[in-house]
Length: 277
Length: 274
Image 1 (cartoon, each protein chain N blue to C red):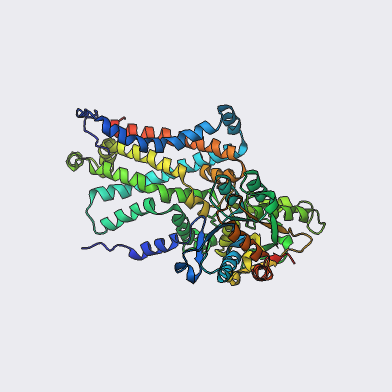
Image 2: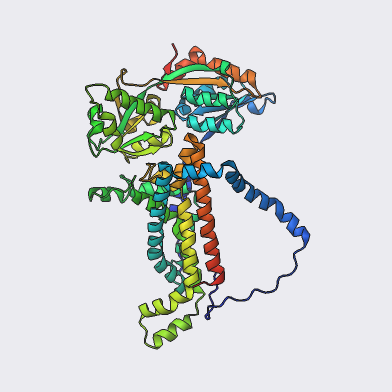
């Protein structure tokens, strides 16, 4: 008798492995790139929260720059700053906060003058559609037994989440013990904002704090959101800069100009980021 | 691998032919490549700083959790893996090859895949997770999840070693014991285990060392919470972005643990210590 090998299970595993890469990188090139030998390539290191917005930006940029190629490296800003400090080749760094940009400046990879704010982001509370914890308002976050996921403080969004809780604790409506009570409910400090999002979608946690731009994606129908009012919210400043030793500085500068252009800013806004103007 | 002899005395190694200088020279680049990064880690951090960081609660918590979870993991692997290994070694049954392959699978899979798979099974919306949730058992984000991830990844190392150990026993010895009136549990206890002792112990140490280094499945399935699910590898990964020195300290400790474990495992496997 022949043993039947569980091929179906094997296929599942192989399929899954494709979507769990730690730092996804994405190459996009315009159709003419094969014909044009003079094409230049651009390596963009961008915060995980910019994944969708920058992919679209890159596609639009290539329409205007046929023959060129853009490679994206999306990861937590702190991870990208570390990679830059260790000498990873890149042309542009887009960080979700000033701190990681300063780290890149300290490492000598970015000159202070090229620093350019290009968008802002705000925090939002997400929870699974079936709402297992019965969340109605932000105050419910301190209910004992609720399972909350935050990003680790190493990631900008993790620090912003703590800032929000701090602000809420100073608001009499929440009470001074709010932050401590909420932190008691944290079950995991995830490494980046995407991991927080995935685990809330999976229903592993009752709630999570992510960027507004994370929700205005294709999977918006998979989670419910609760807005954080402006006076408690933290506006994350996103910075963009040219890497000092870029091999294609002109193309890189064009990309930065494009991000700041009306078209670029509109694309960012369509992904839930707050444009400069 | 282990070849336990009945007398328990080590087989004397055959005389080795003299190795030509050329082979030695050719093996040098690979040896340098493998040892240099490890040495660099030790050189990067001053011993005084290492000792100072050792008292950091973040470091101590991670070490404590790693040791506690891996000990539980190893016990579960021995209890659950021994029957599997014994069945694989003794019977030529129907699904033998499928089971053998299934056991190999976790060792070749990226641990991240194991993490996702465990979530699909034991997560809140997983196949069993919903049921467990109704019973009031919550696995995700608890040390139980850490142990499950470690068992999933590390069990094959013990099962493989134990299977080889059991296979190498002459079945006539077991048969003789049972003819003399020993019950099957007595045969297992007084004949099988003593004869495969080194393979069982060596496999356990290997499994323990693998569990200690488990990262990918743990961070996906168990999450990251200091003192609860943040084992040493997770603390190194997160610490790398927060405080490089803490990451270096934990790395050095982890290397020392693993090195000692491997030395012990090799000693047991090759010398038949009892």
